[in-house]
Image 1 (cartoon, rainbow, N blue to C red):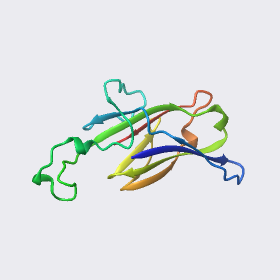
Image 2: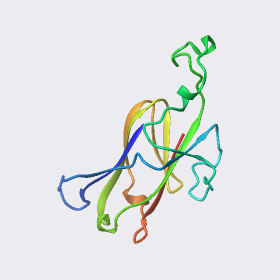
Image 3: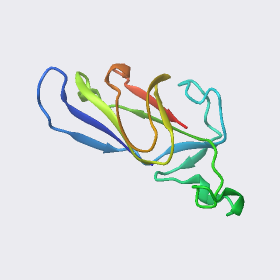
Image 4: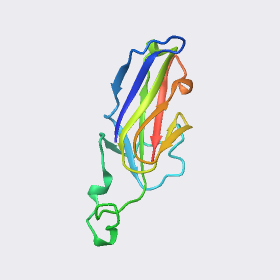
Amino acid sequence: MICNFVNVGRKESMNTSRIMTNLNLDWKFFRGDEPRAWYKGLDDFTWRDVTLPHDWSVEEPFSQEHSSGTGYLSGGIGWYRKHFSIPQELEGKRVYITFEGVYNHSQVWCNSYYIGNRPTDTALLPMTSLISYPSAKVTMSSP
């Protein structure tokens, strides 16, 4: 998975200039299901630090038991979270987050609000209405 946040001009204009910011560094990862991982206030301090792209399944042993579509590696659930701030100068502009190379059935939350899903590969999801300035702190969560 590769992640960027994208600013696409002012809401009230047709300006199509874009600013892309790479968000691949400093993610938190938890292997397994965490029912409250979507919640902004969840303490993820003990979660593992990872950099995207990240594929946790390659850390598992190969097995013929998992031969149907997962490259002989086990599947399952893993959660990713990232905390970051949006620059104040983007207030009043449209902001999106993109994910590329998502393996399977992604779901995405921003500041505890569900913003969408994708069965595979790439997603461009709107975040504008979920950002509160002036602090503009954002917590992204995705299994």
